[in-house]
Image 1 (cartoon, rainbow, N blue to C red):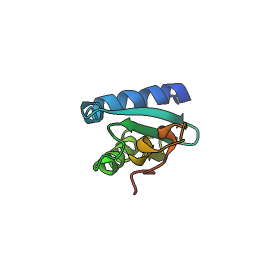
Image 2: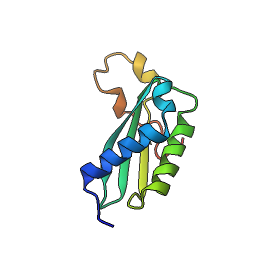
Image 3: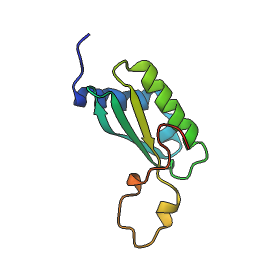
Length: 108
């Protein structure tokens, strides 16, 4: 088996998210692979949109972590970031709500 480049892994994970978890988009959420390093095995996924403050985002995060670890042999560590719904109402922010970690690896 040939090793994937970081870009190939990122694209493969993006495709996997769209194929395996269409519910994210169906409920107004978004997903983006922010990091995919085949050398270290680390993948970072950010959820946004309708996922912010969603009561089941922790379950979705856990499903992402389990699925990527199972389907991608080169992936050893998955972090899923979900913005807190409070970030939408924050004043004076100016920063990206996608940068706020709510869930790391499906754990609250």
